[in-house]
Image (spheres, rainbow, N blue to C red):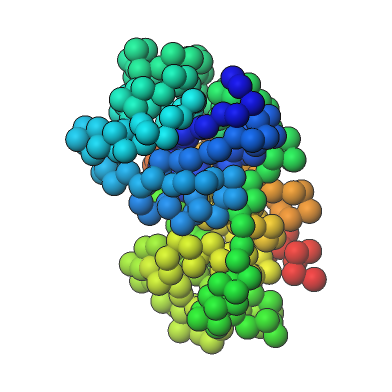
Length: 335
């Protein structure tokens, strides 16, 4: 590769994976000082990608999951071809994710050799799933490895931060805690609702503000018993992803399952306690500085199974984590 590379990154579809991929962008900026990095992302992730200062141009690709969308891919490839990209790094492993760089005739197309996409790539790496952490899996495609110097860090606009804080009544006269009970992947990553409720009550006794944050408003029905109380505020389904990111940067502590909001919190240097169930903190850990938080993971003999639902139907990986344990571990971040 020359020192004046123009990179096109095909971004992952999951929020957390997109945040993790920023380490790759930082690595590229270190290795190729004058390089330009552009990115193709899902429309709902555009604003998140634009909070990465390494990214110059962002192209939305509005194609549903499992849809081939060949015409949309062809039209986007035709549009970007004139930019003369020298290298494309394809982070998803699907066949269809490698189509646009091939159609755009980008000279170097790098990715993992998966889903019969042999002819679409011309620099291929073999992949053993879960052998490497996700961040090193991405960095391997640029012959890099993770260090704290390339930790994800989203760019926060102070004026917008102030506006969003006022809109959602962030009250700095008390400690503000955000609880994120969702995990889009499935139930085996979700700490049970009764434990979130118990934890909320612990913080209420301390007279802290508690916010429930996520995109699924229907979850409110599970938390009615605590939402009737003062200073417990549901933001479920009420914020955009950009607003949620800013809110996570404004509060004193975030407690979350392994989820996209976990990775966002780590990238904005907010105190964070991460709860892992069926997934692995060795594969997708929050890339945070140690002083900003910790991971709670029971490492059972059946863990990690990476299943959406507990195959043994006991969910002990999460049931064995008590609200008292989380509360006790959180106090040092709130003193």
